[in-house]
Image (cartoon, rainbow, N blue to C red):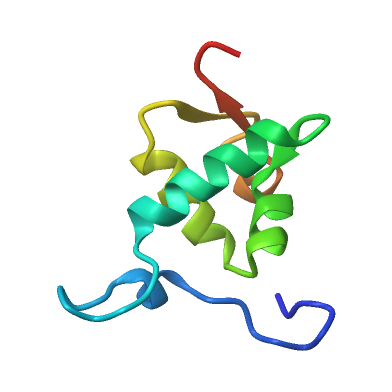
Length: 89
């Protein structure tokens, strides 16, 4: 799933860093996805979030799964089209 610029999206391994290694870990990305998706004017799919963050859909799925406040709705057999929901919305 290359982006418009032809840059390959980051996969889950990009967020598995050594303890002292600089970078973004899954908990930080989870917070970013939560804030970004909440601030969108309408429903946000896993695929839209993956495109916005230049990551694979499995990274977004992992971020939603790691969140206490986010969950997915929609057909589980088509994860990219599932909607990111927020508890208390």
